[in-house]
Length: 95
Length: 312
Image (cartoon, rainbow over all chains, first blue to last red; front, side, top):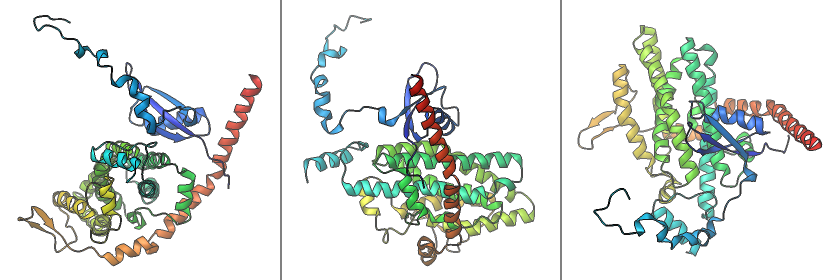
């Protein structure tokens, strides 16, 4: 029996023009062509997409969730990045 | 309780999902791997009893529908194996466990499909029972499992309708066709109720799974819910559910129903059902006969990538 498995790929699908590609799931495939064909066959059987990206899972770099607090900390105390931080008089409109 | 566990418990409490790289108790991980892989195995073993009728479907309409349903089951298996793999186990390992008889799958697929009406009864009752369980699991605490369930539930609804439509056609047909439909209901009713697992008193994993919010409803509650929705559907077909104790209980607001034959239930789980051996043998055969395809695809991919390297 062969001990080598087909690599794992992540599948991203654009459901219609104008929208982002979103992560749909993953699958195993021997190469990129097969990954695309399999993604079409399992993730868009009911017209769920107009465009598919596949990328080998090992090529995805992610932050460490156990350190996510300090990783995202720079944004947590910057309320002035939000429009609601600035007080506007009620009589003003279109701003 | 250490700091990691406190974060985990707080997430469960706040109804936040647990995601693959988050810290989780080893037992939670193991429970999920066991449950999700059993669920995945059930999807692909479930292709066998129905695949049995694809070539003999009574019309092209029925044939394309059944083919699409069985194809969906393969997809559902894939979603679920993928969800299990996020927990750090390889799909090939899970498949080996299935083929070596070390892993379980839903006992319902160890019953034979002897007539075309069985395809109707499976879609209506077996998929109906599965949907009830799976709708609950869309709220499971583990993110990848819950997301796979959302996808599966969307697709599963067509399965149940195509089954019920078959039952409607047979029930409105000739006397023989109606008898076929009744016979299928007689044989599939009790095994369908067994799909919800042992009674709450006997269920070893239930309490912990509920505490971890993997399960949201108990086996007995889901079973009751299934009986309550199925009775009017059977009445509409003009078929009789094979249970003399089945009766509306005004006080409870639910149907009372008879006791499951628990000896049969445990016996099929232990491997002595009508088709246990046949199902496993068919799975192993398909896997072994597909080996050269898997190897060839890999060899082709390697050769191709080497060639690209040389050209570059």
